[in-house]
Amino acid sequence: MTKGPNTRLADLFGLSGWSKGELARLVNRQSAAMGHPQLATDTSRVRRWIDTGEAPRDPVPKVLAALFTERLGRVVTIEDLGFSKPGQGTKRRQSGLDGLPWAPDRTAEVLTEFTGMDLMLNRRGLVGAGAALTAGTALSTALHDWIRTDPAPAAGVLHPDHTRYADHAAFDRYEAAPVGSQEIEALEHSVEVFRAWDAARGGGLQRKAVVGQLNEVGGMLAYHHPDRLQRRLWGVAANLAVLAGWMSHDVGMEPTAQKYFVIAAHAAREGGDRARAGEAVSRAARQMVHLGRPDDALDLMKLARAGSGEETLPRTRAMLHTIEAWAQASMGRGQAMRRTLGEAEELFASDKGDVPPPSWMQMFDEADLHGMQALAFRTLAEHDPSAAGTAEAHAKRALELRVDERRRSKIFDWISLASACFISDDPEQADRYARLALVSIGENSSHRTWDRLREMYRLTGRYAEHAMVRDLREEIQQSLPRTPRPARLPKGAGFREV
Image (cartoon, rainbow, N blue to C red; front, side):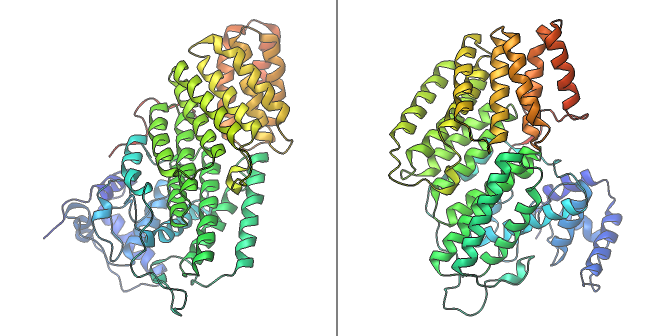
């Protein structure tokens, strides 16, 4: 009895350009290199994998994932190929979204497989940006019920007094081993170092280091530690996955970023931190607004709020509101945006600080609140120019409050301020603020700053005959990469629906 065609494998096979015979020969060669010379794949077997849904035996799925990853220049996991793991039922594959949501005992395995493939792409100089993004509605539908409930104990999980390891044979990592509180504390500190570097310099320079650290944490999670330590490890994994996703987004690796945000939400939920899981989903929403898909962002924000839980601190809820407001502004919904930002201000003011914010929220301070308000009003000004003045006021206040270490945020503030001035028909002031952004943008690896700069450049067109602005336009052209990545996608382009 066959399962029917494996459409995922068929789609990827079509993209590869291989013949079935070529793929069979590559599988044999790669299997032998991995220490399995006894495996012999032929054309008819490849045909059965694709046409009848026959599942190859181990280690062929891993071999195929590595081959397709290298061929397509993006991370391709075993589940992307339509194969289940040993002992994995079919129910978790019915969402059509790479098995979302996966079972608790699968999170560390998914995390490690994905980071391992990502690191392989980096080592071989490939660009991991060729996959399709999952639409916000599809993602939120797949995860909605899962994220609102507490995780159930994983079947077969080992208790701390067991001496054997969790099923590490299925993990492509070093052998699982226990770690203590000092090692976890060092990992938590490394997250803070990576986070500070990202805020200052952008995600391009340290992304690979974060992915490598996350890969090692996945190995640590293969060993079941006492509950207190295990939860802290899950917290480290969630924080690193968010950082890996944010850095990937910052350099234009959008599908890779989205997968890391989903991994972060899973890791946070396994660690019992529902607020962190919701914040991870909100990162995916911010990504969607940046890419010109505010409708998808609003779907994801509903999921983020639903998953955060009632215990979420007011400041965290304020941050979630600012993202929702930015999406509303992108759709020209000025009244809804103003109402949402008003709620954000009230929530932020109501946070008395008697409960210390988690480490991942310490970056969202009053400066960030004003910076997000500036961005929302500046975005709305594209639909309603009267909003530009309010954008200017918030951007100036954000810059007054910014610390020097938040250099990327300062660049965004300068660009928001300059853009608002162009919309307000004040090219002299706009020119001054734009040049302040240009002073720092060359020292930053953030592609998102280039994307915002391109949006501002578009606004300079009406002043192209103005001598000062003409010079500014030339400087912007010299500052931008020669082959720009478009920040906006037409509706439906590059998104995978269920």
